[in-house]
Length: 134
Image (tube, rainbow, N blue to C red; front, side):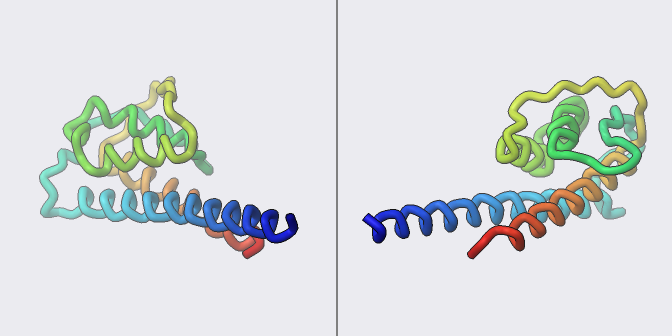
């Protein structure tokens, strides 16, 4: 019985670590996508105005879900960035989120805020991985 419980605990620990790794990988890919769209050679219209869903300080997984919803009304609605934002929303459990923001910002500022939020969420996942036992 002890051997069985040890096996179950090992499986749970490894599965949990893989789950956090998936989130980290998605966040890294989102940040890379943002960098791609911010390049001068990108064809993305950075002058388009979009709803600003990010608070002045801090962000949550919910804000990334809202960013994905905002992108549905832009030329990036079929991009890998948009798909990865929805994948991260699904990963984090935010399947449906409403956008209630009224203020708007240019696309370039919006993309930078997405990247900053991803960095913050990535740091949180790293800290979570450090606090969990191996």
